[in-house]
Image 1 (tube, rainbow, N blue to C red):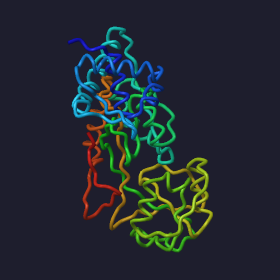
Image 2: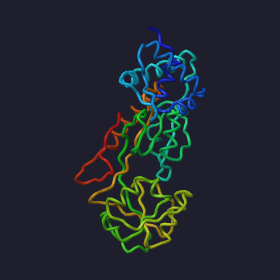
Image 3: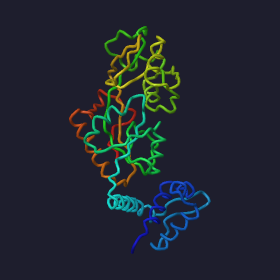
Image 4: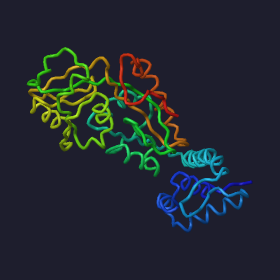
Length: 309
C-alpha cells in the first residue's frame, strides 16, 4: 500500500487541530479539498480515522493509532525533499520571555548547534502557533500548560531567581530574603499577570496579595519603575546582566530559591538535523554548567522539573 503524503499531511493537521477549517487554513487549501484528502486516505486504509458529529470532530481508535506514525511519515518526506534539494536550510529558532533575555542562554550553545536563524516571538502562544504552522523549527523559553499535544519539549536550564528592589525598600539591606518576607510588598510586573505565568504562580505560592503592572518597554524602563517606588519588588534571573539603574538593588532569594525553567520546544516529528544538534549542544552545556540541579528541599518551581518528550 502506497500512501499519498498530501493525504497523510491533511490527516495529521486535522488530527492536531480537531477542526477541519483551521487545518485547511494552516495548509493553505480549502476545507473541501482537505475533507476529500482525508476521505481518500480513509478509503485507502479501509477504516474511519475521524468521528464526525454535532459536537465536533474527534479521532477514532484507528485514528489515534495512526497519528504518531503519520507524523513521522510527513517529517521523513519533508526531510527527503530537503536532502534532495541540498538546501541545507538553517534551523529557525524563536524565543519568548524577552524581559529575561533568553538569547543569552541560547548563545551559550549556538556554536555547537550549526547555523541558526533567530525569530521574534512575543510569548508562548505566538511561538506555539508558529511551530504548528511550520514557520519555525524550534523555540526557547519557559514552557507551561496548556500546551498543544503536537508539541514536544525538553528542559534545558533551571535558573535561580533574585528579587530586585528599590534601595529605599525596607528590605533592601538584606543579604538574602525568603520569598515569604515579600508578602508586604507590591509585586511589579511588565504586563498583566494572566500572561506572566511565573510571576503569577510565585505570588500565589508565597502569599503576595498586592500586585501591579505597567507596560513592557524593555528591561531598563521596567527596573527603573521598580526603583522608583520603595514598596515594589520584582523577580529576575540571578545571572541576568542588569543595566545600571540608580536606586535599584538585587537580593538573592533563599529557603526556598525560586527556579526559572528554560525549555526547548518543537513540533513532534520535525526531522530537521539541526534540531538534534541543538538538543545535544544544550544537554552538553547543561552538564558542564550544572544547569539542571534541583533540590526540592531547597528550591521551588511552579511545577516539578520534567524533561518533556
